[in-house]
Amino acid sequence: MPKRILQGVVTGDANAQTVTVSVERRFTHPVLKKTIRKSKKYRAHDPKNEFKIGDAVRIQECAPISKTKRWEVVAS
Image (cartoon, rainbow, N blue to C red; front, side):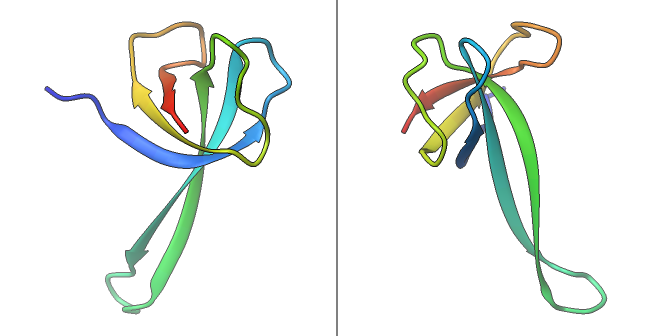
C-alpha cells in the first residue's frame, strides 16, 4: 500500500527535529453544497532542523518515531 503524501505549511518549529505542519483540505458540504475549509495539524520529523515557520512542505507517512510523530518531511 502506498504511503500518503500531504502538502501543508509549517506552523511550529520549537522542538528539536520536529515541525508542526498544518494541512488544509477543501470539500463540498453534502447538504449545503458549500465549499468548506478544514485544517489539521501533523507533527513531522525534520532531522536537520532545516524548515522554519511559513515554509510550504510535503510530508509522508512513516513508522512511528515518537508518541506523536508518524510523518516525515519529504521536501519543500
